[in-house]
Image (cartoon, rainbow, N blue to C red):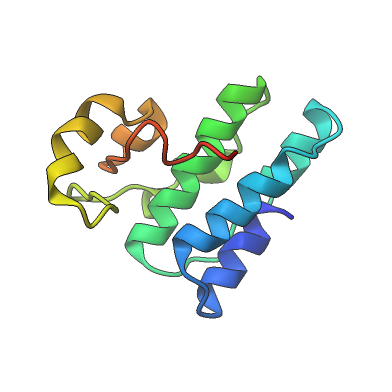
Length: 120
């Protein structure tokens, strides 16, 4: 599965959290760094401000984690929010997310907990 494919699923009505989880689950089976890079190279279609920024952050985070080049599309203005956003509906976790959110997400105004991207 590619990140562009995950974005298309969100555009078709799949919840962002589910599409991202499926992408991350599938990413575990990447053969090598080239495979990882190919999965994030194509730009996902624009869906809405939150999804667009989240997918940009995710691509940047995955690239950094796997030591591959961050795709240029992640730097486009549509991939950044003009406000802060906590995807979690649990208000009590917002302070933790401020500290734990990966840099690729924080710089886009998105605050997620440390375990949000962890897949078991």
